[in-house]
Image 1 (cartoon, rainbow, N blue to C red):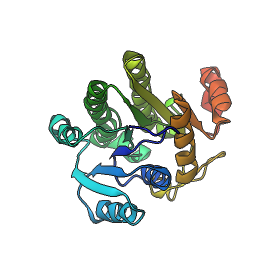
Image 2 (image 1 turned 90 degrees about the horizontal axis):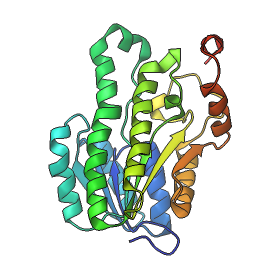
Image 3 (image 1 turned 180 degrees about the vertical axis):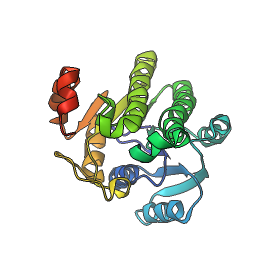
Image 4 (image 1 turned 90 degrees about the vertical axis):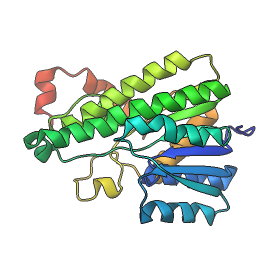
Length: 251
């Protein structure tokens, strides 16, 4: 269960090598979180992440999880929940893709969509049902401001995040009143391995700043978190901009 300050005692991370997820878990472990499940494709990076959290005093276990294999999600994640209640699930997997290449090679675009949306829908529903059976817990989903309105420069990624964002909001409505808290997180450009080599956007942020916002959202049981908060106003303006104007913007 969460403590009096809203900090989860046990956390399941889907996408166990995500820099944002690991920054978040490190922050939570420094508070009171004690049990962490890191789910992801087996790799030295996943094991290194687990060791880093163990050095902070957490009980960390890794589990083989593949977003692109939805047929395995119920079995794999069911085994985690069978070990005991999970106070927070952090759905943090996703890929950026390469817009120019993905337009030329549609199967690459399909992989972006299947990872960011289809895989998340499958895993999200499995976890939501388990949390509802417990009668408590939070499902935190990493979306993106890119999903607010598809831009020419990354509309494949943006459209996958738009789908994920809408799904998460609908799931939150469906679970309202069940004891399960659903929170969608919309960061702007995050300086991380995934964005290395890309031109940095205004109001960029870091994994640590996103982690801070997630912790605050958990304490307040917020439904939507923008990082940084100013993006809420900016994206509202962009969302309502006439299409002819939007096309000419250098974004």
